[in-house]
Length: 384
Image (cartoon, rainbow, N blue to C red; front, side, top):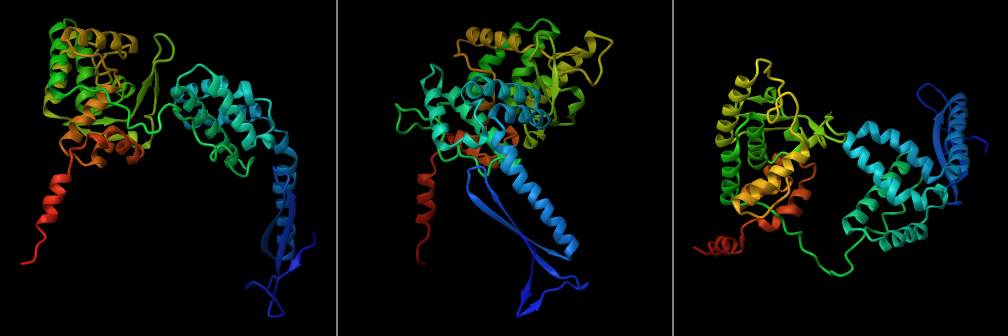
């Protein structure tokens, strides 16, 4: 449509350089077939004409022609390249696997313009029929939502239609409190780690012993512990700045930590400082190749995930304790702090959580009851 000169009080609006103001309007049809109009302001005929051309390209050509023809599969192919640059390899591989199993078989051939709430509701019903765990279904929803958010970011979709549908729920439970955490109390951990210490004969055996101590005293993730080098220890501070993913047999893939908050500096408790100092001397005595780049818990290479879990099961059985996952040692670490009233923000920082709400939702129920103390404080407010 023609460019419109902007007037105010009957006079043509100009900038300080004397260029006339033009209102540039472009009509287009969005991905849902609705008529839309976009309007911008420019000064000078040349600038206004150029702006008009840009808007036509951006809105009429891109949104009207390209986007409706793009399928979910094509979107996923584009997303895969972007996602590989933005996330750790292990996270990327897992996300793409979920999309290939839960999303593409049902929605892959759909054009983006056809991805409506009814279509997504049908997808959700199809997934709900599958004989898979609720957590697996929810992971499928999360992966699809991230894919559609990418489409919004690239302006292929005006909004994510999945957000109004909601994630999968447990139909058999109206209210489900926070999932029962599995963790060792300090006394249980001491029984567990005593067995690990008694059975350690070689430097590698001691590596498992040290690994479980770091997990309990620091709360680091398994990949973060595997990646730790002696150069990451400065005085009584442990710098967590990398992780290791073991996707292929015998191959270590070093990646950044899970998120920005996972880069953290943690003060090391005295018991762990003693354990680390003793282990460093063991490694140093075991080989003339020792260097500060040795993995703390493995040496020249990290311990194998499968072997760590096998030792975990063995130590638990020998100590007469229930078996907990390697990840549950993080819960053990957090439970000690929470039950001693440590501020939730510090708990989140030590765990490397990106969102304190995640920490609160997971551990709030462990905090000691404050009702009696709260009433006692209020009772002190009396007229004097």
